[in-house]
Length: 424
Figure (cartoon, rainbow, N blue to C red):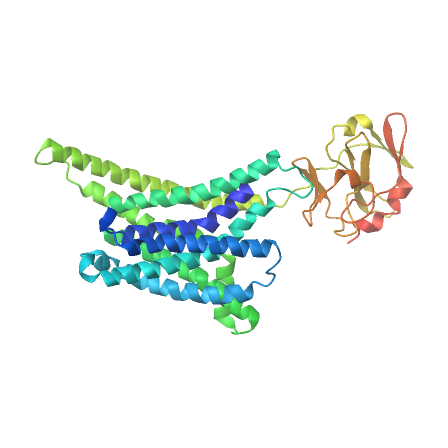
């Protein structure tokens, strides 16, 4: 669930913040007095979403295997749209003030906003949508607890982006419009940097540009710190949050009458709450995209080897030690001094899967147990329990053993013969 959450939320957060900011800055009128061009932003969102779904479907079905011919022109359009949108936001207050007198400029602003939203969503959402294809592991039933947890992580990721955007939106009522505009411009600048970084990466890969020295190192730094750019997009809204606090404390307590006094108190309370929720949301996103991502990328640690009976020629493991159906790891030092590991697990039906803690494909990386599955540490492939004990693929390398008087008996000579699998 956590893996889906920390993948989906950053993929949708930037688009949610962009749509929210433009709806705040370019919205005028209500009902019939609302200009028709206001719906162009919604149209851009729908077009971007449908295009992202189509692109993700083509990628999932391998109809599109080379994405460069799509990403290259799209990123060029994203950069141009970002620059145009920055100009629109700079003049947003002039455009929306007495817009009936110069409606054409409002229409132009909404058109640019709709185009920018469409391209931004198209760029951001295909990878998010493709997360839907990994809800069910190959060979698993459709409805499992793991599938439901992945689906919950996906839903929570989308919901978190929308909720965070709504929290930041509240600052528009308590901070001066100038500060919300400043935050939006900072958001757009970071979005432009993201799109420009992706564009330069594509251009570099196809050989259209050559970067050396500082330019190359700067591009590498931006690629490696893409997550921090997303976090920065959230923290820019601390600007209107601080402005809300300042405005709240600047509100005079005394008033000409009780009605004004209550209104001032309500405004101050709303300003404090708006700022508090903004800070909480920013901290929550930062925590999710740092600690949460670190948890999902954390390398699994192999369980320590267990004790067993070892004589000169045989290793003996009692059934009672390994009959719980979980992976058990054991260590053995071969005659040539090589430290080896082997695993034992009771399979469905009562048979035992026994083999080296290594395979022909991935070497001695080892296996670990997660959610009832045995997984190769190096390639992250889940091993079919029924095939443990048989050679092939990423299966543990098997070796002979016998069963006698409630125990598994392994000749140490058979282990000695396989010591080469643990030599680097």
